[in-house]
Length: 503
Image 1 (spheres, helix red, strand yellow):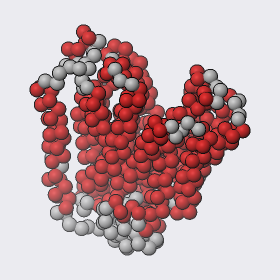
Image 2 (cartoon, one colour; image 1 turned 135 degrees about the vertical axis):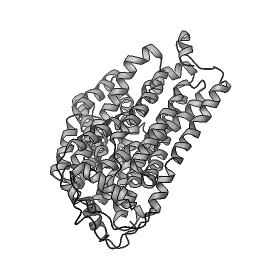
Image 3 (spheres, one colour; image 1 turned 120 degrees about the vertical axis):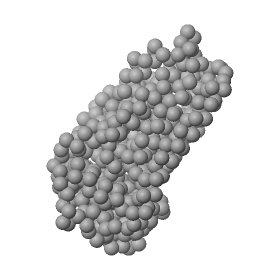
Image 4 (cartoon, one colour; image 1 turned 180 degrees about the vertical axis):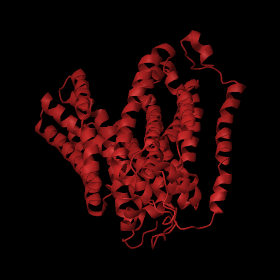
């Protein structure tokens, strides 16, 4: 249908949805359900394996980075790039979509709100799927959903786009926490921190660059719709590369599949310590897989601190920064100069990612996260002070904006990697997904707040957002645990010292 609309400039608005198209749309969820059902025999085998003592992972944690590690890193970077590409195309499809459907910008803004809602739900849902069915299986299902939701590029009505955009967001929302979870459970402890942060930074940047490049090259030729049709080849690419993605050895061990876990460990370490492979489980550990376990014992305060941080970051990124050019314009700055200021500040912020990686790896994981949270809050207070004092100086605003972009980019680069390190294997993807969802939920609040005019006052909005950031920094400074260079099992052993741990 898309190809047949080429003579109309690929304009498909108002076209009739015939029986063939409706049947094809119905086959998409049916195919996803059948694919999910294909995992059930394996899940049944896991449950029938019976409880076994978990493996020690000191061999793989002490191994140097080898070809298998770098192969996994490359594949996960590509997967994360594809994941970021999906929501990143929203900004590029807005102008063409608004024109073709003849709707207002406010109505088109619903698309971003629906997509963020989908990613929020998807982060939690796919985290649960990854902890129940496996990390590799969740990546496969997510890729299949990528392919299915590519049909949103052929929707003839805006309302259908809203529905498909929600599903698109749901498919994209889960791949982020799953990739971090798989990486954390596979790479050696000495290199885990910097690789996780680098994975997030490179994958996110590459995703936005790919979205921008695709829009520049393809949109003039095939209209805005082609950007959503890209879900078909990119999803197929993930499925093709899945052969190079192993199942997490820690997930396999937690499911009682020690033989399969040993085989994966052998790939990444070259040998397995058979004599000392079995170890007694940590005292006090339960297999409570409910989300309530994330809010018990040693995990409770950390989870609440990370959730507060995620919500505040979403408000910064999807609220404060989104409306910053408009607010600067209302302060007397030329609108073009305000947009150029944000672009220059973003360019100055790029080297900050290298500082984040270095500090997270060489100094401290939790202290680096807290440092950048505090820096983000302090920068927002600087905006508040500048607003109250009536500062209009472009160099001052560039400096403050660049500092905010550096600090907020550092926060999100560390937030989910840190979450992937602190939860037990049977809840790691769930916990990472919940923290990822909090940042998207903050984005929903930011988008809704923008519509309601809550970001119309630069100083007041900066002051309000700084409060939850300061609270999260205080909670993490008090209850956060150091993860730098430490085995995941050691981290859990320290968290178990808190009475009442549920997982």
